Length: 233
Image 1 (cartoon, helix red, strand yellow):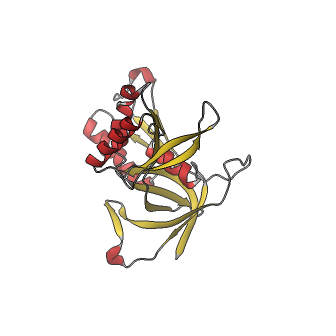
Image 2: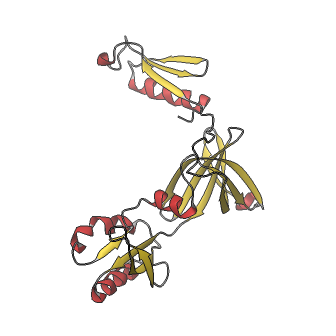
Image 3: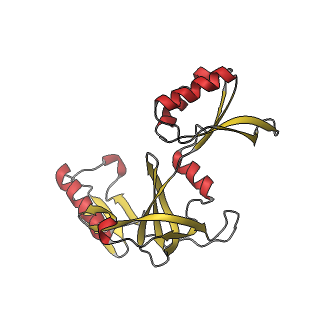
């Protein structure tokens, strides 16, 4: 099994699939894919909990059979009995959040308001810009996942294991060297994008002035600059 070490640059999701961009110690970007099924907890009258679980079954959103567990309640600071539910379709969480008001005073629902990338990072013990080691299996070229773009092909590695190389509690920690793009107007900002105030893009030692009279030329010029420089921020 191979691995890559670097910094967590970005985390986002498409349903249960988590995508992690890792910036290695040489400045190269690597893309990994993982799967994550979040946990929520409910507590209330038995008939309401049964109806809640039944609705998740109807939506094909139940990953496994719910189970009773003990968890520490934030407000009372004591252990309470709750029903642990693992969600198979994280998009259902938005529906649950939008209906929380309907359960107010009738049934408690915990962790449903956590965004999936946040819940994933908490579960894996990672944090933004954490130094990590990502293990992945070497696959045949025909089995690899790719992202096609005009700037090349990005291989998506299937993440097998993730290790944190640092601690969120460290006061002195290393940060990656970012490739930073600076943007500004050549004239007063009150004039906006005008012929007299082209958009100025600065990247390292390069400085471009993008004409703004024609919106299409502005967009094309900006996209070309991004493809040629590939900034991080």
